[in-house]
Image 1 (cartoon, rainbow, N blue to C red):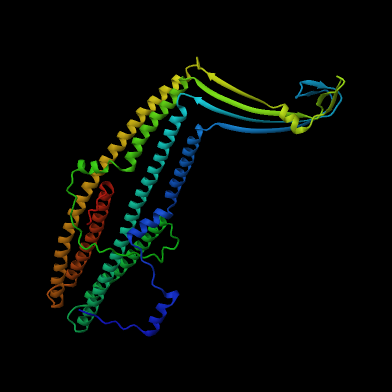
Image 2 (image 1 turned 90 degrees about the vertical axis):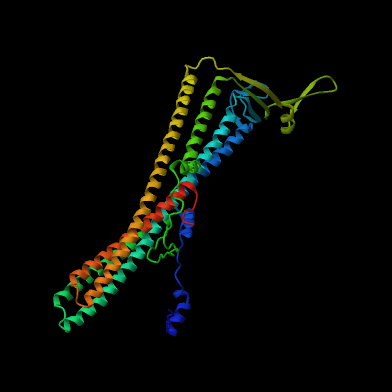
Length: 454
């Protein structure tokens, strides 16, 4: 049946103004995307991952040599050692300058740099999995809060519908009182039930506001009062896909980030063991250097034509050139006895591997339990929803029958109130069962990456 709505022109014009623009309504997908971008806990995990990227880059540069340049100037008086001639100068002020360039590189260290690099890669992988795990947790929390908001919205509509129906019945009963067909007590009972229904509306609105507040806090949205959702067209939920056995669901859940992180933890422990064992090996390093110096008291000797010698000032750059020296050295360090420190460290790392293996098994058992629980919850929620549907159908039909009898005077107001209360209770139970089932299906989707709702 088509309905025609007449909108005043002034209101229509106001709605076109910027201040009266249509408020935004959020879909579940938009809420999840917004949470991925703004949630503080996700950002904290991402910062940790960024730190691990820096550590990985640092490990890659560990293969490069250490390179250093130094320059120093000095001014000394009294009995001073001239570093260019290694002779003492008495009672003079000596100005000197020296520069050096050096490089050092580890030629062999038991492959410690290689193992450190591999461990840094695993550490980054573990951090990225932690980010993914947090994103999954936030997604599930957003979904739960979003469904709470939708459920609260429907609860408000149902409660308002009950109020509207009771107000109509109040009018009918008031007319019957005037016609002396029923007593005033019957009207008072209707009004009492109407007051309870209006209180239910207030309670539903309070629940709705709290649900929006919880969701907005998770989304990092400050003003929850303007937050609105888009109710998806869920219709009547279907029972597709929840007949899977726990083993089948667990096979699909093996790629969950928490399980992958536990497996990465074992690999990291094994790399730590390899790093600890490198301390058994000798280390070989290469050092090279180049340097020169200058002293203002040093003089350059010249031979005269008559065979005598004279001394003149030694120019700075010429002296730097003549005083230049370079070196190359190899350093070999062989560990012989270190109070069994290396051995004990190796033993600790072996224990760490076993601990990591136990952690993986614990994580697998936890996921197995959660999968089995999710399947049980989904099946139970489905049966509860089916039962609630049957309850609603019978309760509403009973309420209609009692209402007709009450209008004809064949039923008391007590009978009518009881029938209305039963119908309200049935609709409330169906609503709760509906969204409980939808959330359980979303939980299964998390483990299997399969959308059971389609």
